[in-house]
Length: 118
Length: 113
Image (cartoon, rainbow over all chains, first blue to last red):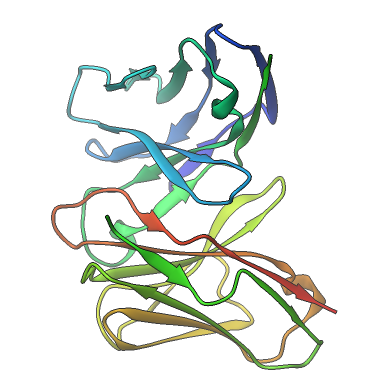
């Protein structure tokens, strides 16, 4: 079974600075998807960024980018120019490529709480 | 935008009660999921469904059942609520193709006393 590990329960960053959130995963598959979700106090899970394992290029979405190291099974999220609105819980998640049944589910890490200091 | 609606934001029930958590999505998605979120444990999958009347157990199905009579609606049932089922429950949906991320509802915080 696939596992996702987020070893840091909490992190803090100064506003306008850069912060990196770590995630590692374990799988025997060669093709899969990785995601970072954000959960603010409103509880709505928001997709931040996604990465397909077959793509070597790291995904970016505005101030958010990932460092995807397939061989090391590492998928870290970098937030640049941190803003107060970035304060939230962040979850790393893994998904197999198949659309059916067990392959359609996401496996989540335990999450990391990010605080942003003004 | 995809909208996933959970019927209750907060719910308080007594031990032994039968509890229904309802989830409706408006994007004709085939896949629907129920997750449970607890501090320090992240999100854990309870049940999921990839078609009407189809269901599969997730990682922690004990004490729960589900119903999917219509494509847009996926219900989570606690047959006899217990205090250890006090938690945040999140419903999600996704299309069969193209494969992509899950879209989540706002969650139901259930307290069992």
